[in-house]
Image 1: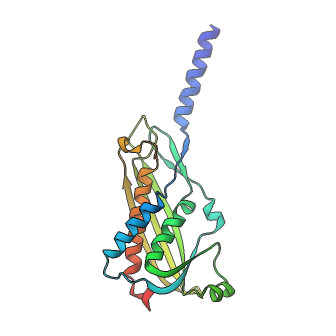
Image 2: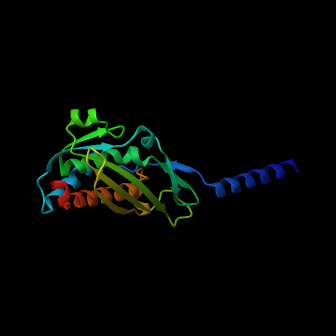
Image 3: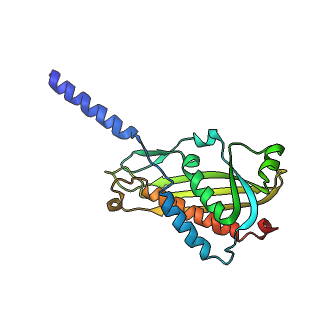
Length: 207
């Protein structure tokens, strides 16, 4: 009887764990070398290939870098990642294709920072994501989306432009191997390439 009770307890615990799911850590930024290559290709495919001769500040705070997001994966599980930490480099790389100089900032710049860095614009991104998978057996998400909303202001805080783009990524189960964030990384590349194109096509940024 004790053995049967023990087995039943294990079964119940397993069922509860399965229903609750768990969050698996993934990275959604991808390979920086691949990102640089794709951004260069995207830049040469646009009508405006010359960088805008201005210095911009990219504002991502330490609090945002530490922010963790949990979204659905497959098999009832979830995935966990830090979108601002992971996307800081991809956004920086893409902005560097648009502007002659990009400066990373941990907070909105004060007047002293504006002057010392010779900032023309300040770029503040907002990131949202979705993920999903139809699998009942494996947890990596097969579909992922990254929405970037980049607010561009002048040094006084006056709005210059706001760009919103959404990137989508898909990966089949056979592609994952050890890279369980592949769909997310493809979504990131798609999103930042679209952001680059949107920025380059903004005449107000060239004034």
